Length: 257
Image (cartoon, rainbow, N blue to C red):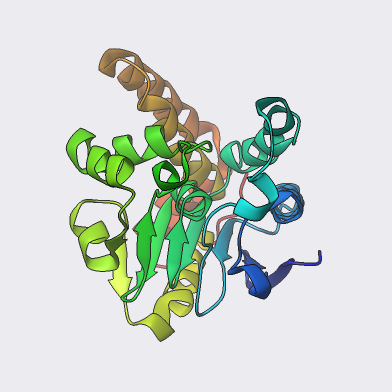
Protein backbone atom coordinates (compact mmCIF):
# COMPACT_ATOMS: atom_id res chain seq x y z
CA UNK A 1 0.00 0.00 0.00
CA UNK A 2 1.68 3.19 -1.17
CA UNK A 3 0.75 6.84 -1.10
CA UNK A 4 -0.89 6.72 -4.52
CA UNK A 5 -1.18 3.02 -5.37
CA UNK A 6 -3.43 0.58 -3.50
CA UNK A 7 -3.63 -3.18 -3.89
CA UNK A 8 -6.35 -5.61 -2.88
CA UNK A 9 -7.59 -9.13 -3.51
CA UNK A 10 -11.02 -8.64 -5.04
CA UNK A 11 -12.00 -12.17 -5.92
CA UNK A 12 -10.42 -15.61 -5.84
CA UNK A 13 -7.22 -15.39 -7.83
CA UNK A 14 -7.68 -11.74 -8.84
CA UNK A 15 -5.47 -8.91 -7.62
CA UNK A 16 -6.50 -5.30 -8.11
CA UNK A 17 -4.03 -2.43 -8.50
CA UNK A 18 -5.58 1.05 -8.37
CA UNK A 19 -3.70 4.32 -8.51
CA UNK A 20 -5.02 7.75 -7.61
CA UNK A 21 -3.07 10.99 -7.66
CA UNK A 22 -6.02 13.39 -7.84
CA UNK A 23 -4.15 16.69 -7.79
CA UNK A 24 -2.37 15.75 -11.04
CA UNK A 25 -4.95 13.65 -12.90
CA UNK A 26 -2.95 10.52 -12.07
CA UNK A 27 0.19 11.81 -13.79
CA UNK A 28 2.89 9.16 -13.57
CA UNK A 29 5.69 10.74 -11.61
CA UNK A 30 8.63 8.79 -10.18
CA UNK A 31 6.78 7.93 -6.97
CA UNK A 32 3.72 6.55 -8.78
CA UNK A 33 5.86 4.49 -11.15
CA UNK A 34 7.81 3.08 -8.22
CA UNK A 35 4.67 2.17 -6.32
CA UNK A 36 3.17 0.53 -9.40
CA UNK A 37 6.32 -1.54 -9.84
CA UNK A 38 6.17 -2.59 -6.17
CA UNK A 39 2.53 -3.61 -6.54
CA UNK A 40 3.30 -5.77 -9.56
CA UNK A 41 6.23 -7.34 -7.74
CA UNK A 42 3.92 -8.11 -4.81
CA UNK A 43 1.34 -9.86 -6.97
CA UNK A 44 3.98 -11.54 -9.10
CA UNK A 45 5.33 -13.29 -5.99
CA UNK A 46 1.88 -14.30 -4.71
CA UNK A 47 0.85 -17.70 -6.08
CA UNK A 48 -2.74 -17.04 -4.99
CA UNK A 49 -2.97 -14.26 -7.60
CA UNK A 50 -3.47 -15.58 -11.10
CA UNK A 51 -4.60 -12.42 -12.91
CA UNK A 52 -4.28 -8.70 -12.16
CA UNK A 53 -6.64 -5.82 -12.91
CA UNK A 54 -5.04 -2.40 -13.31
CA UNK A 55 -7.19 0.73 -12.94
CA UNK A 56 -6.97 4.42 -12.26
CA UNK A 57 -10.08 6.18 -10.99
CA UNK A 58 -13.61 6.40 -12.34
CA UNK A 59 -12.70 9.76 -13.94
CA UNK A 60 -9.18 9.30 -15.28
CA UNK A 61 -6.76 6.48 -15.98
CA UNK A 62 -3.56 8.53 -16.26
CA UNK A 63 -3.07 11.86 -18.01
CA UNK A 64 0.54 11.13 -18.93
CA UNK A 65 3.86 11.84 -17.28
CA UNK A 66 4.40 14.68 -14.82
CA UNK A 67 5.37 17.56 -17.13
CA UNK A 68 6.09 19.91 -14.23
CA UNK A 69 8.66 17.48 -12.89
CA UNK A 70 10.35 17.13 -16.29
CA UNK A 71 10.21 20.65 -17.70
CA UNK A 72 13.72 21.73 -16.68
CA UNK A 73 15.34 18.28 -16.71
CA UNK A 74 18.42 17.51 -18.78
CA UNK A 75 19.04 14.32 -20.74
CA UNK A 76 21.32 13.16 -17.94
CA UNK A 77 18.60 13.86 -15.37
CA UNK A 78 16.11 11.74 -17.30
CA UNK A 79 18.61 8.94 -17.77
CA UNK A 80 19.11 8.75 -14.01
CA UNK A 81 15.48 8.75 -12.87
CA UNK A 82 15.25 4.97 -12.65
CA UNK A 83 12.01 5.08 -14.63
CA UNK A 84 13.10 2.31 -16.98
CA UNK A 85 13.51 -0.11 -14.07
CA UNK A 86 9.93 0.51 -12.95
CA UNK A 87 8.56 -0.02 -16.46
CA UNK A 88 10.65 -3.17 -16.79
CA UNK A 89 8.94 -4.76 -13.78
CA UNK A 90 5.54 -4.32 -15.46
CA UNK A 91 6.87 -5.37 -18.86
CA UNK A 92 8.22 -8.63 -17.41
CA UNK A 93 5.14 -9.43 -15.32
CA UNK A 94 4.31 -13.00 -16.32
CA UNK A 95 0.65 -13.17 -15.30
CA UNK A 96 -2.23 -11.78 -17.39
CA UNK A 97 -3.10 -8.11 -16.87
CA UNK A 98 -6.52 -6.61 -17.59
CA UNK A 99 -6.67 -2.81 -17.68
CA UNK A 100 -9.86 -0.89 -16.89
CA UNK A 101 -9.60 2.53 -18.52
CA UNK A 102 -11.85 5.46 -17.76
CA UNK A 103 -11.26 9.02 -18.93
CA UNK A 104 -7.86 10.12 -20.19
CA UNK A 105 -5.11 7.62 -20.98
CA UNK A 106 -2.49 9.92 -22.46
CA UNK A 107 1.26 9.64 -22.96
CA UNK A 108 2.61 7.45 -20.19
CA UNK A 109 -0.99 6.58 -19.31
CA UNK A 110 -1.59 5.16 -22.78
CA UNK A 111 1.74 3.37 -22.60
CA UNK A 112 0.83 1.94 -19.20
CA UNK A 113 -2.49 0.66 -20.55
CA UNK A 114 -0.67 -0.96 -23.47
CA UNK A 115 1.36 -3.04 -20.99
CA UNK A 116 -1.91 -4.88 -20.28
CA UNK A 117 -2.96 -7.98 -22.17
CA UNK A 118 -6.63 -6.99 -22.32
CA UNK A 119 -7.97 -3.43 -22.22
CA UNK A 120 -11.57 -2.68 -21.21
CA UNK A 121 -12.41 0.94 -21.94
CA UNK A 122 -15.28 3.03 -20.70
CA UNK A 123 -17.12 4.67 -23.58
CA UNK A 124 -15.84 8.09 -22.53
CA UNK A 125 -12.18 7.05 -22.49
CA UNK A 126 -9.61 8.87 -24.64
CA UNK A 127 -6.28 7.42 -25.74
CA UNK A 128 -3.35 9.42 -27.05
CA UNK A 129 0.39 9.98 -27.30
CA UNK A 130 0.68 13.78 -27.19
CA UNK A 131 4.41 13.96 -26.42
CA UNK A 132 5.25 15.67 -29.69
CA UNK A 133 3.24 18.67 -28.54
CA UNK A 134 5.72 19.34 -25.73
CA UNK A 135 8.83 18.71 -27.80
CA UNK A 136 9.59 15.09 -26.99
CA UNK A 137 8.65 11.59 -28.08
CA UNK A 138 7.03 8.70 -26.18
CA UNK A 139 9.57 7.10 -23.85
CA UNK A 140 7.88 4.00 -22.43
CA UNK A 141 7.08 2.02 -25.56
CA UNK A 142 4.59 4.32 -27.29
CA UNK A 143 6.25 4.25 -30.71
CA UNK A 144 6.70 0.48 -30.52
CA UNK A 145 3.60 -0.96 -28.82
CA UNK A 146 1.17 1.40 -30.52
CA UNK A 147 2.48 0.50 -33.97
CA UNK A 148 2.27 -3.21 -33.19
CA UNK A 149 -1.27 -2.78 -31.90
CA UNK A 150 -2.83 -0.61 -34.61
CA UNK A 151 -0.43 -0.64 -37.57
CA UNK A 152 1.85 1.99 -39.05
CA UNK A 153 -0.65 4.47 -40.45
CA UNK A 154 -2.98 4.78 -37.48
CA UNK A 155 0.00 4.91 -35.12
CA UNK A 156 1.74 7.58 -37.18
CA UNK A 157 -1.36 9.75 -37.15
CA UNK A 158 -1.63 9.56 -33.37
CA UNK A 159 2.10 9.99 -32.76
CA UNK A 160 2.77 12.79 -35.25
CA UNK A 161 -0.31 14.90 -34.47
CA UNK A 162 -0.54 14.15 -30.77
CA UNK A 163 -4.31 14.03 -31.12
CA UNK A 164 -6.25 11.57 -28.91
CA UNK A 165 -8.78 9.05 -30.15
CA UNK A 166 -12.09 8.05 -28.61
CA UNK A 167 -12.73 4.66 -27.06
CA UNK A 168 -14.86 3.73 -30.08
CA UNK A 169 -12.07 4.64 -32.50
CA UNK A 170 -9.51 2.87 -30.32
CA UNK A 171 -11.65 -0.25 -30.45
CA UNK A 172 -12.05 -0.02 -34.22
CA UNK A 173 -8.29 0.20 -34.74
CA UNK A 174 -7.53 -2.64 -32.31
CA UNK A 175 -6.11 -0.63 -29.42
CA UNK A 176 -8.69 -1.86 -26.89
CA UNK A 177 -10.41 -5.20 -26.40
CA UNK A 178 -13.92 -3.90 -25.75
CA UNK A 179 -15.88 -0.78 -24.85
CA UNK A 180 -18.51 -0.68 -22.12
CA UNK A 181 -20.47 1.97 -20.26
CA UNK A 182 -18.19 4.17 -18.15
CA UNK A 183 -19.57 2.85 -14.88
CA UNK A 184 -19.01 -0.75 -15.98
CA UNK A 185 -15.33 -0.66 -17.02
CA UNK A 186 -13.89 -1.86 -13.73
CA UNK A 187 -16.64 -4.40 -13.14
CA UNK A 188 -16.16 -5.85 -16.61
CA UNK A 189 -12.38 -5.98 -16.17
CA UNK A 190 -12.83 -7.84 -12.88
CA UNK A 191 -15.27 -10.24 -14.53
CA UNK A 192 -12.79 -11.07 -17.28
CA UNK A 193 -9.95 -11.44 -14.77
CA UNK A 194 -12.08 -13.76 -12.65
CA UNK A 195 -12.71 -15.99 -15.66
CA UNK A 196 -8.99 -16.11 -16.42
CA UNK A 197 -8.17 -16.85 -12.77
CA UNK A 198 -10.36 -19.96 -12.89
CA UNK A 199 -8.37 -21.34 -15.82
CA UNK A 200 -4.97 -23.08 -15.60
CA UNK A 201 -2.37 -20.45 -14.64
CA UNK A 202 0.57 -22.22 -16.28
CA UNK A 203 -1.23 -22.23 -19.62
CA UNK A 204 -2.24 -18.58 -19.18
CA UNK A 205 1.34 -17.51 -18.50
CA UNK A 206 2.65 -19.50 -21.46
CA UNK A 207 0.03 -18.03 -23.80
CA UNK A 208 1.06 -14.54 -22.73
CA UNK A 209 4.76 -15.34 -23.15
CA UNK A 210 4.27 -16.86 -26.60
CA UNK A 211 2.15 -13.99 -27.90
CA UNK A 212 4.53 -11.29 -26.64
CA UNK A 213 7.75 -13.02 -27.69
CA UNK A 214 6.32 -14.11 -31.02
CA UNK A 215 5.85 -10.52 -32.18
CA UNK A 216 9.61 -10.16 -32.60
CA UNK A 217 10.31 -13.62 -34.03
CA UNK A 218 10.12 -15.06 -37.52
CA UNK A 219 6.94 -17.10 -37.86
CA UNK A 220 8.79 -20.41 -38.09
CA UNK A 221 10.65 -19.72 -34.83
CA UNK A 222 7.41 -18.75 -33.10
CA UNK A 223 5.69 -21.91 -34.30
CA UNK A 224 8.56 -24.06 -33.02
CA UNK A 225 8.35 -22.40 -29.60
CA UNK A 226 4.57 -22.81 -29.56
CA UNK A 227 4.74 -26.51 -30.42
CA UNK A 228 7.46 -27.18 -27.82
CA UNK A 229 5.37 -25.42 -25.17
CA UNK A 230 2.20 -27.22 -26.27
CA UNK A 231 3.91 -30.58 -25.76
CA UNK A 232 5.21 -29.51 -22.33
CA UNK A 233 1.64 -28.86 -21.15
CA UNK A 234 1.10 -32.63 -21.09
CA UNK A 235 3.48 -32.90 -18.13
CA UNK A 236 1.24 -30.67 -16.01
CA UNK A 237 -1.41 -31.78 -13.55
CA UNK A 238 -3.71 -29.08 -14.92
CA UNK A 239 -3.79 -30.79 -18.33
CA UNK A 240 -4.85 -34.08 -16.76
CA UNK A 241 -7.47 -32.36 -14.60
CA UNK A 242 -8.83 -30.27 -17.48
CA UNK A 243 -9.25 -33.17 -19.87
CA UNK A 244 -10.64 -35.53 -17.24
CA UNK A 245 -13.15 -32.89 -16.17
CA UNK A 246 -14.18 -32.42 -19.81
CA UNK A 247 -14.75 -36.16 -20.24
CA UNK A 248 -16.58 -36.42 -16.90
CA UNK A 249 -18.68 -33.33 -17.69
CA UNK A 250 -17.72 -31.44 -14.53
CA UNK A 251 -16.03 -28.16 -13.72
CA UNK A 252 -12.22 -28.51 -13.49
CA UNK A 253 -10.25 -27.47 -10.44
CA UNK A 254 -6.93 -26.15 -11.71
CA UNK A 255 -4.08 -26.05 -9.18
CA UNK A 256 -1.36 -24.42 -11.25
CA UNK A 257 0.79 -27.54 -11.25
